[in-house]
Image (cartoon, rainbow, N blue to C red; front, side, top):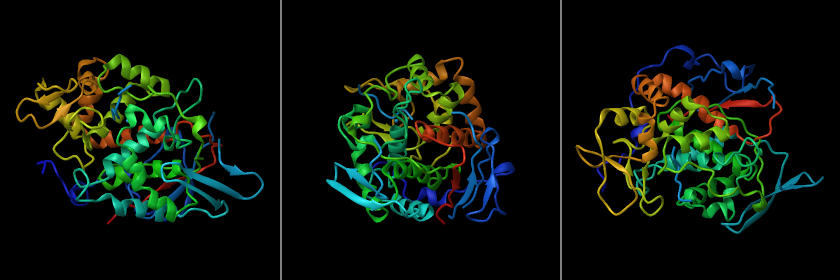
Length: 368
């Protein structure tokens, strides 16, 4: 058994109380207020949800380095299709999903002593990330809308190796809640993963639709962990992110580990792979990293123990003069990292989703 196996650690983590805009002791569940996206506040609540209205506004072997609507016309029904499970089900559309209930069901399946380090959280986050990170702002294709990873060839892309397990794990929740789309379910699973492993509150908006295989995106849109800073900018600028957001999203590497049978790389980034912290930045700056001597792809291990690892793309964050200051800030200030990650991850999950500007924003209470 790995010395990095942590069970229930995200449920017991002690964290100093946060001040400023993160407290929401007076907000009532299902209250509706106005919020400006330009000055968004991410309240810290803990397992019912609040809703807010949005402000109107204009419209390969890569691994997660962080990585036509089916409406039956006029009938009030839609089909949900999962070719991996052989499912095609006609579902009434007039039922409003109970998103807090679905969030709770996701939270309830996260802990699993027989899976990886004891939590499905890291792979749920990776699924949400890879479903959204295919967005191309120039062509307005890809993104969180569609859930096209259900289909080949997207499900077979090298960057998505191993994610079938996450999709199958969430299938029972989909069957119990057929009114939620796959694309909403996957994005909500990413939110639940971050929050339940001790991370910040993530604002979430439903309304994604599922697409068919014809909408699958081409391979190569997700970050390649073997590349450096120029590649990262090419990938993330294409989606509309800046340098600070790139570094903030990279902080998700506090979670999970690489697997030789998926990405080819091996090992965790931090000694607590089921706790969402700013530990990725602290390890990146605080340890001496040496190239691993093995037959696998180039990666780095900490010189002291050889048990932690970093990828070439990770190392570029401290080698690049524009990226490094953000790494240093987040290593010193976890609250700043949480704030910036919450904003960047919300932005990621909104890529490719048509919005009117009047949608409700949900904040979910976490597991006790």
